[in-house]
View: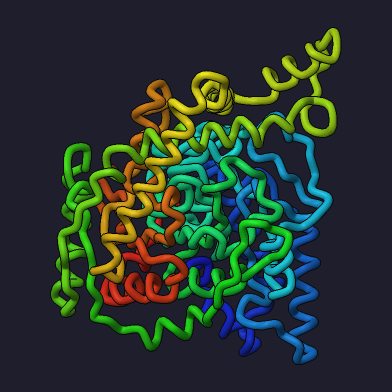
Length: 489
C-alpha cells in the first residue's frame, strides 16, 4: 500500500477492499507503520495494540473472502479517544488516576464498531478527563499539531484530530462536552461532528459532565463522518439519556439534499476576539453559500454570546465534581502508598492522581454545589441554560442552520495559554452554547491562514437533523479542495 493511500477517503478504501486491490491486513499495517513513523513528533496515541489490530484485520479479510463482509467499515481502522471503553484495552483518560486501568467491557459505540467490522486500533490522547482545549493537560504529555509541531492540536480530542490529520488513521471517535470535537477538528483541518444530545449512546464513556458529553465522529471528509455516524447512532437502553430517534442513511442523504437553505449568521460571533484571518475565511464560506442561492440571514444570540462560558463552567464543573468523586483510591484507579489512614487515602490518592486543571474544576464544581451557593450559582446557571436553549429555538424558526467560526483563532503555540485558564476557556466561545442547548454541530475546513494553519467553519443544526447538517457541509466541501491538503511530516 502506497503512502498516498494513507489519506484516501473511507469510500475509496472500502472500494479497494471490496475489489480485492487492498486487504485489511495491508491497510492496518500501513496505519501502524505511519504511527511508528510520526508518533515521535505528533504524540497522538496513548497506546495501540498491534497484535490485536492485525488479528481483527485477518478476521475481516476472512469474512470478505467468504462473502460475509459487514459493510463499508469492515476492515477500516478506527482510533478511539482514551475515554471510550474497549474491552481488554487501556482506559486511562490521559490521567495518572487511571494509568494502569484496563476496561473490562465495551462501550456501546465500540460494540457497534466491532459489529460493523471496524478495526479498533489505538487509544488517542486527550486533555485529562476531557478537561481542556489544547491536549496539553495530559499525563502522557502534549500532542502536537501536524501542521506545525510547535502548536497545539486543540482539545480535548486533540489526539484524535491529530491522528486523522497526520494520516495515522482514517477515522476516529472523540467526545464533545463544550467543543472538544469541533475545535480540534478546526485546528487540525479535518471534519468533526458533535451529534444531538441523546443520538449516540454515552454508555462506556468516562463521564466528565453528563448533561453535556456526546461521542462523535472525526474524519477527513464529510462523507466519511456521515458513514461513521451512521454506525454509532441509535437508541441504547443502557443509557438513560439515549433517545429514540430515526437513524437515516446519512451517506445516502448527502446525495439528495441539495439546498438551497436558509442560513443564519449570529452577529455576536463575529465581534471582538475573532482573528481577522479566521473571520475572513469564514466570511468567504458564507459568501459561497450566498452565491449558491442560499438565503443568508443575520441573527442574534445575545445570551449565548454573553453567558455561555460562565454557565458552562458552572454546570460542567458541578457535574465533574460529582462524576469524579468515584476516583477515591479504594475501588479502582490510583491508590496512594503514602496514606496514613482511610481519610488520608482519599485525599492523597486524589492529590497524586489528578492534574492541576482537573483539580481546579473539581474545586470550582464542589464550591458551586455547596450549601449557600447552590441557588446563587448552579441553579441560576441552569435557568440561563434554559434561556439559551430557547434562544436557539427562536432563531431556528427562520433558519435551517447557522454558520459561524469554530474557533476564534487558528492553532496557538504550545504553552501560549497554559498559564491563563480564562484565555484557554475562551477558545471555546463559539462552541459551548451548542452543548448547553443539546444541538448538533460540525466543523468543516474552510481555508488556511497566511502561516499555513487550518481554519474551521462551524455549522449548527436543529435537533436530530444531522442529515441536513451534513448536507450543508458537503455542499461547501465539494466545491473546495481544502480536504485534499495534508501536512508534511
